[in-house]
Amino acid sequence: MQKIIIKEKFEQDWIRMFTHLANLFFEQSNIILEDDVDAIQASMSLERNSAGGLLGRSSLTRDGIDYFAEFSEIEEDGDAKVKTRQLKRIYSHIFLDVLEQATGMRQSWGILTGIRPMKLYHKYRQLGCSFEEVRQILMKRHRISRDKSEILSKIADVQLRAVPDLYELKNEVSIYIGIPFCPTKCAYCTFPAYAINRKNGRVETFLDGLHEEIREMGKWLTERDMKITTIYFGGGTPTSIEAEEMDALYETMYASFPNMNNVREITVEAGRPDTITPAKIDVLKKWGIDRISVNPQSYTDETLKAIGRHHSVQETIDKFWLSRNMGMKNINMDLIIGLPNEGMEEFKHSLAETEKMQPESLTIHTLSFKRASEMTRNKDKYKVADRATVEQMMKLGEEWNVANGYEPYYLYRQKNILGNLENVGYSKPGEESIYNIVIMEEVQTIIGVGCGASSKFIEPETGKITQFYNPKDPAAYILSYEESIEKKLAHLNTIFPVTVNK
Ligand code: SF4
Figure 1 (cartoon, rainbow, N blue to C red):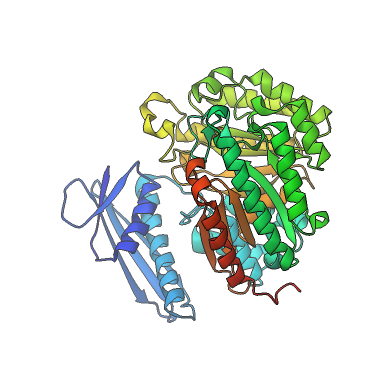
Figure 2: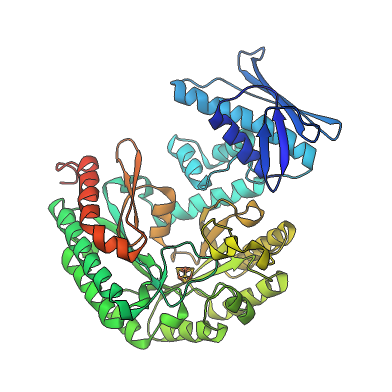
C-alpha cells in the first residue's frame, strides 16, 4: 500500500481520480490527509499564465527527492461541466507527470483510465479534426504514447472503412441475445454463465422467456419499421443448448424481427469447442449464420485444466476444422495473455497453432482480475507473468498479427487488467465484426434480451446513454422477464418517438 499526501483539499470525486492515476504505478494506493513519514508528498496548483491560459503546476517528494511538472492550456469555452472536465484533465496531467518521474514508469495510456480510448478518438474526429490533429491532441493533452496514438488512428481508419456510416447508425439498433449456460464455469469468468444442468428444467423455462422477449421486441421494431444493424448471440455459450433449441430460437428471431434481409451480420458465439457438433453447425447454416467464435484461449492443455475449461487443445483444433469444412466462413478466435503459469513460450506456441488455422479474426485479451471471478478470490493459487513479460507478449501478438495479414479493428481496456494493457481485436481486411465496432464505440442503441443482457439506450440527438440490465441468474430472469420487457419498451419509446425512421 502506497500512501500519498496531497496538500490541497479536493472533493471526493477528485480524490478518486487521483487514486485511479496513482494505482497505475502502485499495487494499491491511498490518498491520505494526515501527515505520515512513509507517504509520498504531493502538491498541485493552478494559475493563469502570461498569455491568459490555465497553467497547472505540481510537485512531488519521494525518498527525499523533489520532482516538478507543469502544463498549460487555453481555457475552453463552455458550461461548468466543460470547465470542470478541463481542470480535471490539467490536474491529471501534472499529477501523472510527477508520478512518472518519481517511479521511472511510463504510462503508455497517459491520463486515460477509462475503458474506451477509441471513443475519445472518434469524438475529436467528429469535431472535424484530421487524423494527424487527433494524434497530436492525444499525445499532448492526454499524454498517450506515440505507439498507442498510432494504433488508435489505425483502428479508426479500419472501422470507418468497415462501417463508412458509423457516425450515422444512431437511428438503427443492434440486438444482443444472452444465453447463460456453459458446459462448466471457467475460473476467470464473470459472465452470466451457469454450468448447464438439464435436470432442473431451467433451460426450458429460460428459453420460453427468451422467445417471448424476442417476440415482444420484434413487435416494437416492426411497428417502427426499424432497421437492425447486427445481431449477436453471446452468454455463456449460446451453442450449449441443443441443436433443436437453437433452431427454434432462430425461427422465432426470423419471424419476429423486421428487415432481416438488411441485417449486416449475425454472430453466434460458440466459444467452448466442446459444445460444437455437426448438427448445430447444420442449424446455423440453415439460417444463414456463418460468423461464429471458437475460443481456444490457450494451446497448452495444463493451462486449460488450471482455468477449468474442461476441453482439450486438440478439441479446439478439431472443432475449428469441423466448422470450417462445414462452411463457416467467418471464424473468430480469442487468446488470453497472462493465463496462469504462461509466459512467452506458451504464448508463442499459441500463436504458432493459430497460424495454421488462419481464423478471419483474432482477439487478444490480457487477463484481468475481475472481482467476481474464482481466480480473483483465490489469487494466491494462480501464478501469472509479470508486467514486463505481459508487455512483451502483447508486442509479440501485435507483430504476429501484422505478419499474418491482420489489422487491429477494435480495442478496449478493463479495470485490474495485467500491466494496465488492453484487449485488441484483429481481423483480416473486410472480416471485421461490425457488432464489436458498434458496441465498443457506443454509436447506437443495443437492445439486450436474455440472461445478463445489458441494453444500452443511446439518444440519437444527444448521445445520452441509459443502461438496463436483465438479471444474470436464469431463476431470477424467469420471474422478471415480463417486467424487463415493459421497462425496455418504455426506454425505447422515449428515445425513438413514433415519427423517427418513417
Ligand atoms: S466459456 Fe466463457 S462464458 Fe462460459 S464459463 Fe468460460 S469464460 Fe465464462
